[in-house]
Length: 281
Image (cartoon, rainbow, N blue to C red; front, side):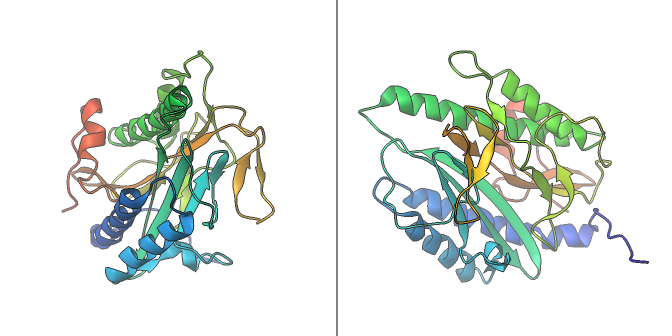
């Protein structure tokens, strides 16, 4: 009979996850600094890979069977798992970048969304920035909920509550993808347990020291139906509506929580919720 692996890490294992989280954050920061109109997502991919390897780590996306890149770059109606390519980014594009690093067999995983400026279409850019901002706020609402939750299901409820309170300009609710969710992270980039971005009937596992999860709301302006493009990777909205994706890897430890993939441990994002992250001892 196979032994079940615990979803909870030891204090020593939590400490080993700090550095791959920091390297992931550095790679995404380097990409963000270079993300502008006229660059390609292949160029951004090379920047992320160079940053990770310079730190002595490996791009963990390249360890996924069949995937050859360091980042996933999803543009406009692509939600997640977009493959970097040679298309020049254009004004008004919604660009979501997902990235991770493996150091010593421990993993980090995070994502952000940026809307490129377009002075000729300010209303369109404002609408798309509102989507990204609402998605990011829901991520931080979920992380804040983790700091006081007893069970994992409370995170999805907090994310959904945040988005319900922050609708589109015309009053329509944003859509939360249900087919794609967050996950545990540690020795593998994707581990148990699943981390839902919406209310579920079950309470989920207990939130206690040693739990490390990647929280990643994927939010759309239209319906939540998706399709996989012909490349067998890219997940796009079925109706062509814009999408946003934000993610952080977060550790629960005996003194509180720490956002592994934020350079300040999540202090700035958590401040509006009255939560102060605590470094892993």
